[in-house]
Length: 48
Image 1 (cartoon, rainbow, N blue to C red):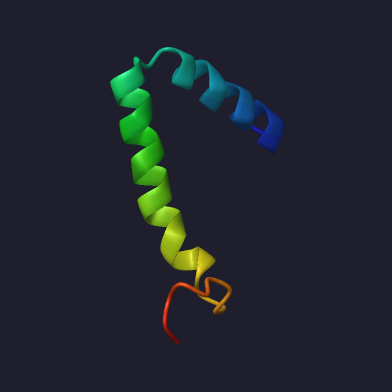
Image 2 (image 1 turned 180 degrees about the vertical axis):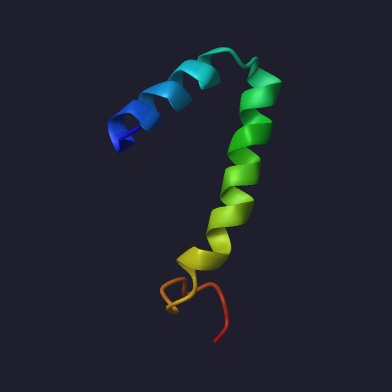
């Protein structure tokens, strides 16, 4: 499966979720991604 097929599969699965499930999924993604976004000091709201 290439990246485009994976993305399409994820989109199809997300369409099956109700609003509460979609919000929960988005929250979990954000919680997992945010620590990596500030790893290089690019988030000025976080202290060094």
